[in-house]
Image (cartoon, rainbow, N blue to C red):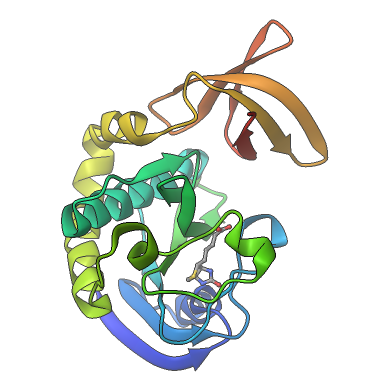
Amino acid sequence: MFTIERHREIDSTNNRAKLLAAEGKRNICVVADRQTGGRGRMGRQFFSPEGSGLYFSLLISPTVKGEDSALLTTFAAVCVAETLAELTGVSAAIKWVNDVYMNGKKICGILTEGALNYENGTFDYAVIGVGINVGRTAFSTELSAIASDVETETGVKLNKDLLLERLLERFAHMESALAQGDFMEAYRKRCFVLGKDVTVTRGSEIFAAKALDVNAKGELLVEAAGERMTLSSGEVSVRV
Ligand code: BTN
């Protein structure tokens, strides 16, 4: 289903996938041992040292509407969480919308990008970029407060090739899973912000809310200042 393109070092696998998209390519998985310009959401960098991480981007041509783009990220988060839980025997949780956690620490981030066809509202292409801290990782003091890696959290040394193979097997079922929508129940079960008091960051707005549910489009339903609202983008952190 996916042709794999491997790189020892690259700026960002998402950037490379977008270049391939411009050449008309699809169904490619770009994977790198190291990224010199790994990108995260909200313009952040994604720490991507050699050896310990699995960094890859899937270039696809999804049939979902552009307005349902959160489905791509939520599906990817379920794939990563289920695969890691299966291979390590340790549960993996999801922080809406795109982060996978183990033992309260972020071990994976997902950055979904794409180009829309404005005539019919569908994707010309989408790139799902996944970064998993697999082996023991030398984080800065600042990062180690929030991030960790699978080996540290589970004691299991995963083979990155096997992990990628298992992930790609799950991603191969994306179209049917998105059409049926049944993966969203798995997402809700793993989404640890539900029922919690959270701080929402959306653009320049920051506000307190309670996270209530994730709807069938992968959007987060929250209550803030007595009003219910649906978030299709943004970021939440649990208030302690
Ligand atoms: C986030 O945590 O904000 C998302 C991080 C996404 C990182 C992955 S690593 C592979 C792909 N290439 C990138 O430059 N970013 C994504």
